[in-house]
Length: 179
Image (cartoon, rainbow, N blue to C red; front, side, top):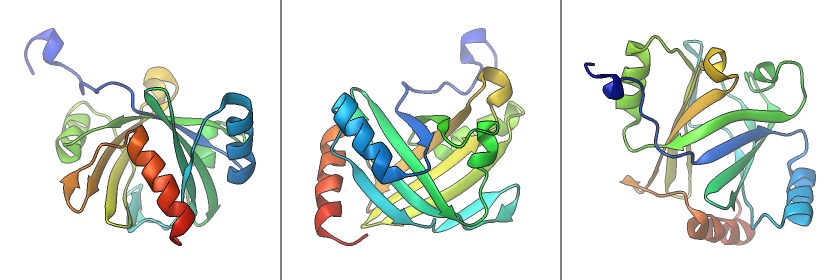
């Protein structure tokens, strides 16, 4: 890799905080009332595919996303299936699960992670309404106490920025269309 500044995975600016919750509707209400965060785009279902520890798993759940300044908040409520979300919280029922970075080159980032000796905890793909999100959680808790996630969103196959106006549109569509 060469010079010191060329080393590492070179994450972009922080894009997302992922928080595991036990009741997504209650948490949305608390965040909206207390902090004015919203609107929330809520999605429900299971991933298109998901690998964890080299095996296929099928977690089901609900995800809610809203913008809080320059960072997206993602609330995750797992409703069924095999998953590592609760296992990564050190015995707590709710809490910070990961810090996420939006990327356009997930395959390259995963290659660099492998070269750096960082394992992938979970790798999967979500699809809904033309939006495809491929993601990977990296085993980085020994580095800073939290999991790092790389997130590659695409809409109809093209790179897609997951920013505030688009989240608002997603929230409005979610109110109209069954997801």
